[in-house]
Image 1 (tube, rainbow, N blue to C red):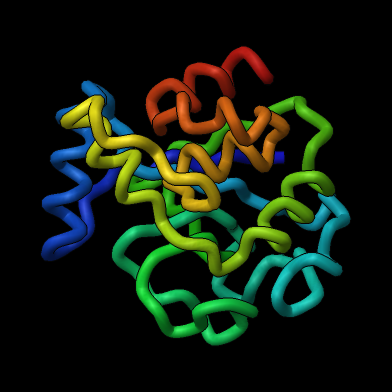
Image 2: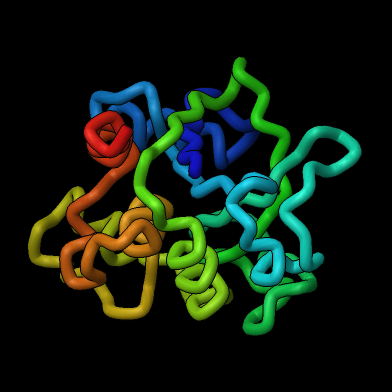
Length: 174
């Protein structure tokens, strides 16, 4: 099983957000995704029923995003902005660092993302980075929080992860 960490900068407002997150975390990473490979054998949980690579080499990834519209296949809030989603991504090494983890969690991760697909992005947790008086909200997810919960971190503790320390933990899980 793989986890991908985004190290590039998107255009526009999302690029500003990439830079601010990296600055705040003192990290080269601003986002993360759980990546599903064919050998994970969880195709039945993917939106198209397969974990096979796309014609462009893309793989199914899952995370929570703030500034993207949820895809049409999302069972909740399709077309709305922000939340837990599956997306095919070409993991260009210029933009992504990919880590293999030895955790045998592919089935659990796929089931977690399927059960939470369409749930809201956790803006309160992001704002909590700036002010500790703003509490994190239940059933809302940042990218790293969703990835950590899907990998088996108890949901009550998953909020403690950001892309930088999730990448450090992934090294321990190798």
